[in-house]
Image (tube, rainbow, N blue to C red; front, side, top):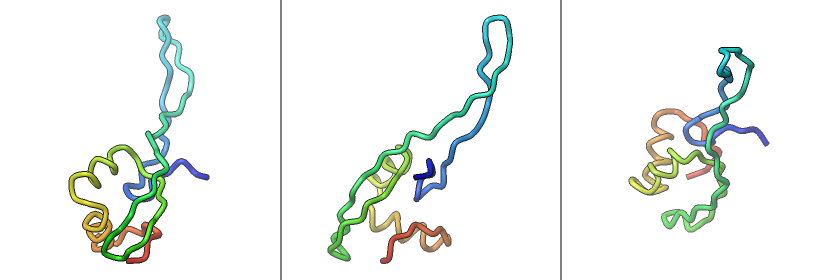
Length: 82
């Protein structure tokens, strides 16, 4: 499975490890992804999503249904049918 958040689209980025002597070697910064099941009471179904911690905070604030509707209006493909 790819390391991409299904809701925010966060994905790994690249950068450098910088040593004390200022040598630089390539590294990857991975997003903080969690596989989580959500219950949507409006549709009476469970959905399983791979989401970033930022998306989890937004879901806690708005609710899963409102957040998915907001993303749908923006044109983001979340893979969830509402």
